[in-house]
Image (tube, rainbow, N blue to C red; front, side, top):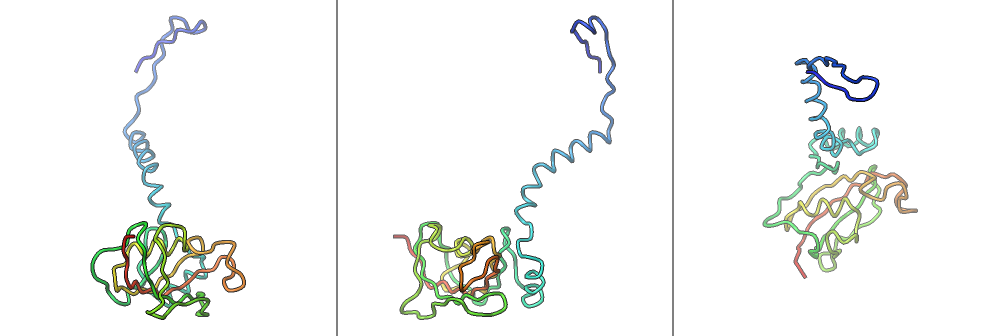
Length: 176
């Protein structure tokens, strides 16, 4: 490749710039591809603190993981469609700290917990997992701190940076 420079110091001089060699081209392609792949890999990073991850993997080795780091086990399959943002859902649940202490629950089918999905009425982990559940489905759900109450916790029941474990049953959902 030849380049002509036209500034005052190099007027009329010609310089040879070596062509890019094959390994350099591969490196450049890999670098550019990495820029597109890294965000996808970043979204799948581990969100459980290391000691919590070890506990979860030991106690629930069959748990599947979503792209955002929520782990779950389907305890009972559901039927039909899944809730969409804005749908009103009715659920039964038991919320526990990772070591098993119950901090909240609603288990009465006559008085379920009712809220709208994706309306900032519950923790982010719930909004995400409920959109994957079908009517009648029951799951064990393990939510990392950043998708639960994070660094603030919810004193005195939920300490800061707590991984939470829920059994959630989706009784029904509807648009209203």
